[in-house]
Length: 82
Image (cartoon, rainbow, N blue to C red; front, side, top):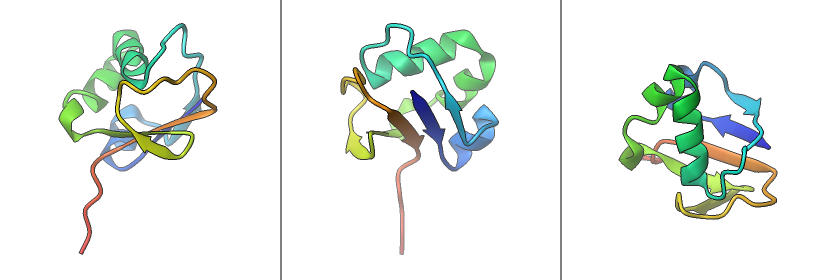
């Protein structure tokens, strides 16, 4: 699956996107847990999960949303505007 990172998440992970095998992760939250356990850069990116939003196949959702069959998961900070 394609995993996309935006804003400061991209900076901390060191990539805008990457192809990842979800490795049995059933939800976006489990995917984050798997990533955090794999490398320190993910721990830095996902240290404050209250400041992370997720979209699965370009639809905003919560972290407990299933990623089964998903082609894309995107992580980004809350959007602010003016």
